Image (cartoon, rainbow over all chains, first blue to last red; front, side, top):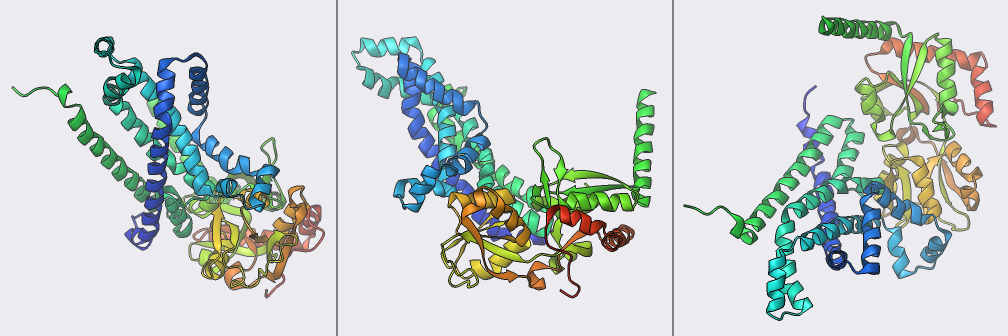
Length: 237
Length: 262
């Protein structure tokens, strides 16, 4: 058994395309997820009686079912409805989106990461030091000003560690995109595996690409922490 | 002492495993169990189908004990080569490309491939140029995928590869695909199902051995020439003594035994 580098060299363009798809999917999911999670997290932390419970139900659902199941449900499950198929035949612009595997993956991934991120944000808000809030109130700040200037900036600093975990989990989790015919990084690995019958080369190289991506993500978070968590660093003598 | 005994036991099973592999009284059969009507899984997780019945008949002819290993299609050949099982009896077409890596017995059935399209869609599936911009579905790592990639994708069709057969037909029914390519028997099974009501086979039968091989055959590792010989003899004998036809009639009304020279 030897490692056949030629396989990787000849299929490198395939891997690059896969890498592009993976990066796009993850970036879109994280961006949409964050946009959605921000208001949801605030609602959840503020404990509005009804709204809070609805957000809780949403995060509970998405955090307690596997992302693969969610993806298969959006892609294959919804596609089964005659009503949706009729919309596709009628070329309805909006519903046609659900025909595309790319959109289905973005939707499922966004909703999934939004659920986790909302809980992370809510937790960070709940941990706001009481003193800070009281001080802000004493300064006469309104609720929205307090949120903008005091609570959210503090919450974002506190959540950086756990959010970096979520980003990495999302990156690894996106490997299921090939289940709905998308040629992401894992899809490229599977193709090479099936075409050259070389599982070792195919998956070792795929793994290395994810390793590299994770390394870069962690590096970026390190840089961010250095900038925004500078006050927590041990002071030099 | 316990550890020593454990190592001795492990050694004994390894040796006996090797001994079994040598005289082929135990044959491990790789099967996809997701390719009806040739192989599929019943709701209570039993492998059934034409391939399974053929495998059982072959094993009883060889007086061997057969165990079935279920394996996803795109990993079938790697799994054979890494010795997860000894043979593939799973409707695998014997093609020149695959023969570079593994060996095949004589084919045990051969059916042409056909496109399936929606009734009344009037697609000219025989012409790759006419299929430009159309969405074609195939199963990944199949002869059908190779063929469609070579002629239709290059002519501008949008080709999507799926992990398993049911997903391809499912997306045809959902309206995500305009045409799918499978063997005529798989298509017949789909067309006879509830979902297949509004669909038809279209175009001319596709049989070119360059792309579709010589028919479905049993695959073994290249170094297991003795096993290949035994399986070959078994297939021939079962055809001659009528067992093959008995099994075939259980599934199909027409003969699918490969015609010589095709």
